[in-house]
Image (cartoon, rainbow, N blue to C red):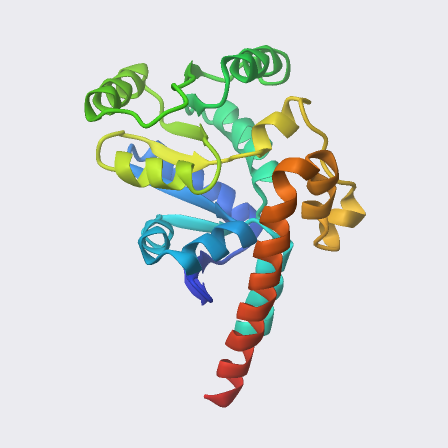
Length: 249
């Protein structure tokens, strides 16, 4: 898929359906690979740290998760891009994985969340080949532990691994596990608790208006206020600068 630069990261472009097709094809090929689901937070983190920008830009596919990312693609490149949000991707990929007999694995999150996920999947995706779940310790893992985890996932036969560690931890983990895990990894962050009903998603009008972040802020103000206040402001300034540079070329 073609990628276009948006300030600090390269975003894959195409229709929403083409993202589903390409991710499933990548998983079915048994290629060790990873997919980043990019929003404003990820873009700003990449701008602040070139090492993290490299992690994102080395991904096989990077989807435009946030509505502001699609607006930036249109402003900077004149491309009218579908939003490819993790909260939409997760259930749609599970549906395709079930239809195409692609085994899936869930890595990350609390054991409670994974137990709820197991119950949810048995009801909504009864024919899905579920290769397993793993809730890692909430600390940095040793290389021995990483080797044990990669062996566990490889032996499970999983072809699509959903990673629930949060940005930027999940993207760094996927990059470190490329060529160790023989599957396609995709960082879905907060999409899983929304899908299984542990959290609520913003109404559709807020999604289209680019206000999904504000809805999440109302649910978790203590945790998210500083992040959104900083990242949203930085993004606006960076986008204006990038737009001015594009006009001066």
